[in-house]
Length: 112
Length: 114
Image 1 (cartoon, each protein chain N blue to C red):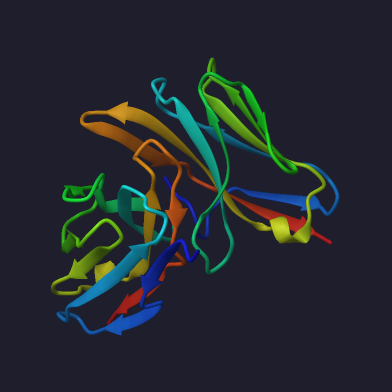
Image 2: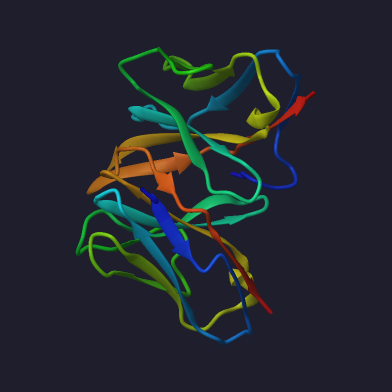
């Protein structure tokens, strides 16, 4: 039982490049989330998907898009990376939004 | 708020002592609370939770206390071990338009001295 799997673990992008962060969970959870974590800023919600087929903006959605591909997978896309998007990105899932989260191990992204 | 970072509140305890980490939550409508542990370079990990109809819940070496009157949550770790060194943060969950919202607390860095 792998839980929440994120790929890649590390990535360096040049300003303006695009990339997709992948996330998959094998716990049959309904809800999935993308957070970024920055020193001094804590965990900030980018986008979430309360259930398959729905996605909603969180606290800091600008510059990102998401796709809930199926119940297992929730991807985060940066269309044109900016240095301000340098961060550690965490994917998480939960049975429903009013339950605790299982987090992935994170993707450390640097935009130069 | 702030979580993992340079200016987190820090608690330093001796190995074997008990640790108490505190959290003030913001919303009186919050009805579910969770403590997470985040070790360096890893994702947050669920430790223990408590619903608002309880004021105490115990796990293995950990106890969570909830005081709804003053909107305060604490995590007690018994016989603290070096492996407990991490950042700990609380989360509150409350009903919100169309669903529920989770708010993560600032985080406290726990150092365990051998």
